[in-house]
Structures are given as structure tokens and as C-alpha cells.
Image (cartoon, rainbow, N blue to C red; front, top):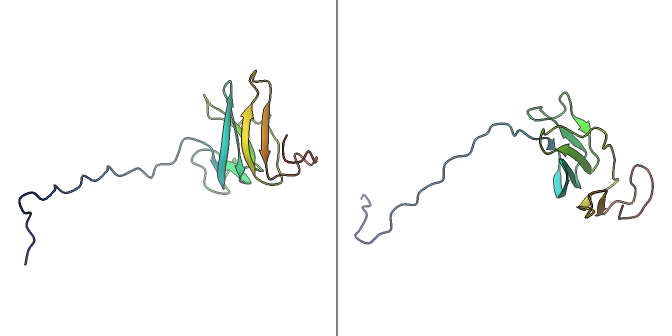
Length: 122
């Protein structure tokens, strides 16, 4: 037996266009980003991750850097902000910029920031 469409049957669904498997043009982390804040052209990211690597670089490849739960990159160029080199000993859950853009605030499960013990907010 073969099935034929009967009068009044809905048309078959239209399938979405497949997505590409091309490499992303942004830095990749080896975990999850929970929060981001933008100050000027800098994006600050916090979450649960330990490494970041440039676009198109495989895991463990050239240019991969330690990024202990916090990372910053330039929104315009996509380049890492090398002068922002900080570490959290556990995940950051939220990052927010001060209204005047002079600083960022980070909260999360961490108890150490760059080896100092500020508690869960810095």
C-alpha cells in the first residue's frame, strides 16, 4: 500500500536550511560563559572555563591561553585583551560594568581572585 495525501491534509512541513560547520570567527572557551559585560570596545566574559583559544585554532593549539573563569576581548577586532589577565578559582556567574565604565563587578562561586581572597564579589 502507498500513502497518498487526502483532501484537507496539511502540506508537509518546510525544513529549515542546514547550518554550516565552519569555524566561528571568535575566541572559543572550553566551558560555559554565564555572563558578559561591554565597556567601550571591551567584552568581559565570566563563567566556568579554564582555557581560551583564537578563532580556528584547535584545542591545545598555538595561541591557546589560560583563562580561569574570566576573559576579555576586543568587540571590534576580536583580539584578546592581553592586559586583562585575571583568574577566579571557581566559576563567575555575573559580570556587570559600573555606570561610568570605570570598572567591572564580578560575582560567583569563587573565593580567590588572582590568589587573593575577596570572597564571592570583586
